[in-house]
Length: 291
Image (tube, rainbow, N blue to C red):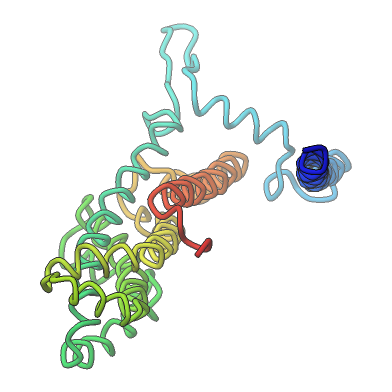
């Protein structure tokens, strides 16, 4: 018994040592990241404090913070009449962000539904894949700014054009990821399911879909990233409310501090969206990468 107890104690000590090692590595990484951020902010502040660059082109960090705060509150613009203006372009900055997120949510949701269906069809019927694949690759290679004018001609400058543009940005990576996921399913798994009496629908539902779910979720992550980088192009015309439209308009009006504030908001939100999708994927496919 004492030998077994010694073995258990040793394994626990090794596990504790490994946990402490991981914690130290994570802590060092966080310290390095925070230190780098502080160094960038300090350099930025030094350049603006010494006026090495005209504030019109590079406002100070304090000016950007002030623009961010002003975009989320009401300001008195005429003390005589008490007239106030709330936010920017009649919307708070968080309302602009929410409008963009809603557009991306709908565009990507439509792309997920149609992209997964088309991906399954293309992976199971080679003639359809042969016929559609060149056009899919053609669409994937086109930059959104290349056809936004055509979309506006077709459907106008309303939200429909924005939904369509975001859909087209998210659609190809989801289809391609679905095809790769379905074709990556091992034939032994399908044959085993059929030998147990599973029909075609059962094979798709119980074998193919779970096995291809991880690549599909990876495609969704890419699609959300593409859609988020396309949001500014989608909101170039009549994009208010919208964080991309606000960034564009503030840039044309030489409100550089507000433009930088919008960019700073867009970046972390993109990282947060990607992290959320990754967490959802870990919950839906806990076995991925472990077997």
